[in-house]
Length: 162
Image (cartoon, rainbow, N blue to C red; front, side):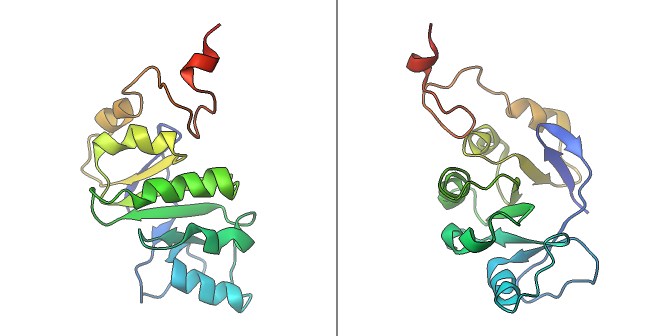
């Protein structure tokens, strides 16, 4: 099981990412692909205590609107570090859909993106077992101030100055 940095500290990873077409084990906390999650939800077969959802870069975050209050966790799957659509999904989930649960980056994000992902509302990062945890944690505080408003600071710098 992969390691997890959640809210800037190393945390237990109780959830397993399920790939498209794979099945879940009963009772196991599983992060399902959007299509699988929606199919279960439409049949009222989602157990929100043990099932969550992940979005691919091309998925529409708005499809989760009917379930947003019940979901504990939503994963954002990075298939390539050059694809920024997951940044937009994070902001949509936090700012437009008011998602308050864990928003987890999974897949192939890079360390240089982590600070910016937290600005977009991501609060958890699934990391490889061989990753340098201390270095990753330091990257979450790369900058002491941000000029523009974002999910982590709703006021731009000029409004925060006294």
